[in-house]
Amino acid sequence: MIKCKKRTIICLVLTAALSMGLLGSSVTAKEKLVIWSNFTELENGKNRPIQWVYNEFEKKYNVEIESIYFKYEELQKKLMMAFAADKAPDMFIAEINWMSIFLKDGLIEPFPADIQEKWLSEILPVYTDFEVEGKVWCTPYSSNFYGLTYNRDMFKEAGLNPERGPDTWSEFRDYAKKLTKYDAEEEIERVGFALRHVGAPAGVIDKAIWLLWGAGASLVEPRDILKGGKAGFNNESGRSAVKLIYDMLYTDRSTSLEFPDPRAAFVRGLAAMQVSELAAIGMQAPIEAPDMDWGISVPPAPAGKEKVTLAAGEVWYVTSASSQKDLGFKFIDFLLEPEIDLWAAINVRFPGYGNAPYLKVNQKFPYFDNPYNRGRNAIVPYGRYFPHNLALLEVTQIVGRWMAKAWHEEVTIEQAFDQAEKEVNAALIR
Image (cartoon, rainbow, N blue to C red):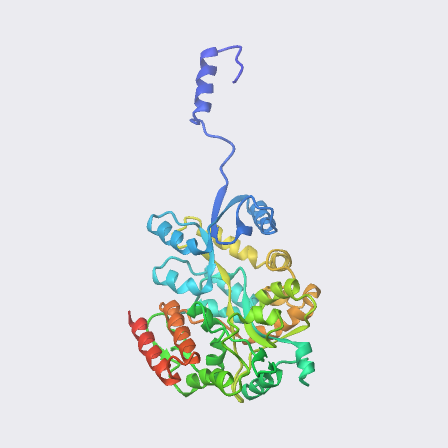
């Protein structure tokens, strides 16, 4: 309480006014940036390296970041409820494959022209897939590339060059046959290639899209159309992709339906090759198979065709409902500072594995000069994100489901793609 010796009444009035906030305050409340995510390391109060990035931004701009965590399976639902109730966060981190949903309802904000120009000039070329209809809508938090990983010792044992994976489909098929092992009863003990063929259909297509794209087929045509389009896989190219695996299953017997999890088969020595997320192998192999000598290559393509692989991951978005858009884009710009990008790549993402820096300038930093990152960086130029079509999630479910049915001989390849085409085209016009 203010101590008064004179003019007691005036002092009492001033004291009351100050306690009620009627005379204002010299201390102004900090601007707050609210960020939602499904990453526990981004939850407030966690002693994780991401807090350093937040702290540096808070100090630089005298602001406060409030980071709120939701479980993965809850995040999209929570976001939609928040948008409907006008209580959306200023920013959020979510899968890049969700972008079409947010674009459909106008829930995210495109980058301002100056930040977009800077972003396009400094980011690795693969991330320009985040540009839709001439506008950039997000920037990566994490990125993951699907690569072909192979066991070098098994390659040596089979008389194959351990310094590279198969380059073409014919070479891939030949390698897989040479790498497969059988027991005395001619049952497969080790597959040359482990195939994802069960579980969520979208998971099947994630690990098989390189086949369709490498053959020259597509999920949706034209690829860059946000709404509408038509199926682009029910053709000779698309059917050849499914047939390659079918022949490896039933003619070559170099892969099998008995190994449903390709990563698990690979780290347990039950498969010589597999295609899945490099970051997952990068974290799993050192723990479960620390002595395994393994390599990375771009998945093969038919002779004369361009090799391609899937890029995926989570990204930062700024919401269109935010009253702090300017502050949100200051944060995006902050993430583009070379020292922040480099520090985050080393400390925040999967340390040593998974995510190298996103900026061109940091790609040759000595820390990342190791076999894993050299292999990863070599396949990044071949990375491609799924098309940002409003029906994408349904399309991947449909195509993945029917490809698996063909591999399980529940239908022929022609029947599978005829039905998938009908369902995809119906989904695209809804």
